[in-house]
Amino acid sequence: MKPVNGNSSCRGQAAIEFILTYAWVILIVVVVLVLVWQLGLFQLGGTIEPGYMGFWGVVPSDFRLSESGDFNISFANFIGANVTIESVAANHSGVDVLVSPSVVVEPGEHEVVDMSGFMPGKGGGQFQILLSVDYTDSRTGNLHKSSGRIWGSYEET
Image (cartoon, rainbow, N blue to C red; front, top):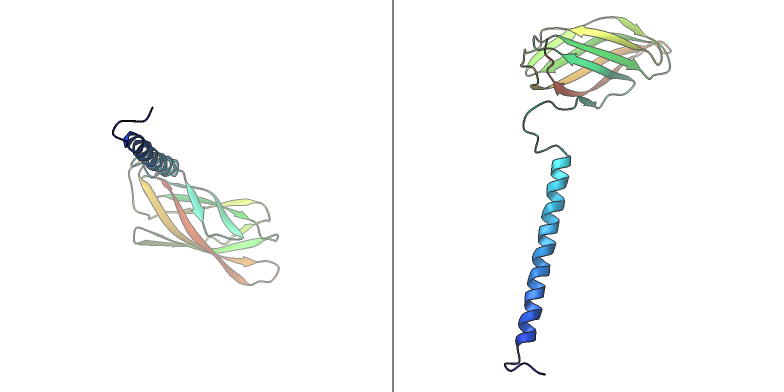
């Protein structure tokens, strides 16, 4: 039986196309929201996962910035020979801190360097430090640089 007005099937097809178009748009929006949520962009407060990027050879393996501005950082040696950490320079919120520990780190081992004078902060507050490590390779006696960025949350003291 044919519809009386002759265009009901066209309206039905248009309605289905309308629903499918909006279903695709809603699906894309949901996927984007899930990706943004998983990347942590909706996390406005609280602690962030500590991390670093950029270093090579002498790499930070663990670090802690206290509320009072004391910074402890453990460096790992991935060079394959003894290295001597000659100096560590850091910049945090416009404050420059420089230490010259002259610490020898054996291959695969870790050594801690303590620094103070950083900007104090509230426990759980976020920080970012630009760090540069000058070290001497025992095989060549040459001075090298390992640098990068460290981030995390202030730890309560």
